[in-house]
Image (cartoon, rainbow, N blue to C red):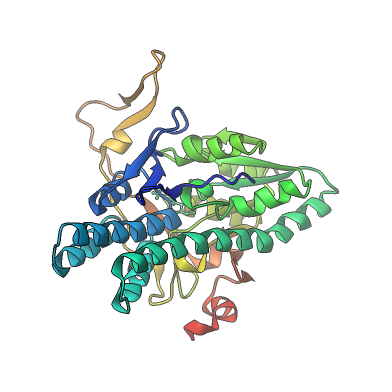
Length: 360
Ligand code: MRU
């Protein structure tokens, strides 16, 4: 596993991230110097994926504290930063978790800047360790299939990007995969392209390539066919918010993969850091806000043209409207198990409480 990260601090104590909108064609980094830079990076998907959104928001608060102190602004500036960052994306609950953590730290602080710096850094480090542990607990699920197949290739299907690019390091779904590869288990990943933003083809395929993980890109609708023909041993997806009863919000299209997996008796796993749990709500279908994004993300595809430029291409008539729901909810009954940093559990209140009794 490379020591590569998706967010880091610079010598002059600002923050840098990868411009994920340009991957896989260009590796460009962006320096965040104000909280507005962090807010825009989250909104326009320069950074994306639930844990990374949380980490970026945390550093956004650090930057707001710095701006406040350097420009001798009053506390209303910081309050505005909290509310702007809170409104940057609606579905991934890690965003709100990270902001609450920053608020809590600052509420008890003497030295605001040092406290914000440390609290944001802690959130980043916590994600690294959490994702590593998700791998430790997810690995036996892959090992079991590998041994059942007598060492033959384990075929894993995934949707969206819940790899390291959606987190800080390791990733959630990729952590068990990287750890399986390290143990010499033969793994092959079916990568859903994940329209409309193509996180699968742009990001998952990119990071699997960087880590030498055998993979094949498929269109979003191919999964059911592959499952019917015994070409998928397990599905692992990430999540942006999971409720107390184990309902799972993830990138649009996840639900259809879960239905196909259920119909074909293929295990459907959800890998999550506990920062993605929202134990204040039960019913994912009615209680999780689903982001609706700009329709042009559906109407246009962005890619590298033959001239080498990255450009949008219109794929429908000029006047055809589109709808763009960013996420869907997979009901707990379709989830085989949830993989967390503390272990593997059923997708149910009992299951989650067995690992996280502090939520009783
Ligand atoms: O819209 P995005 O790219 O932020 O959505 C990301 C996902 O749906 C991921 O699968 C999810 O955040 C899990 S993160 C490891």
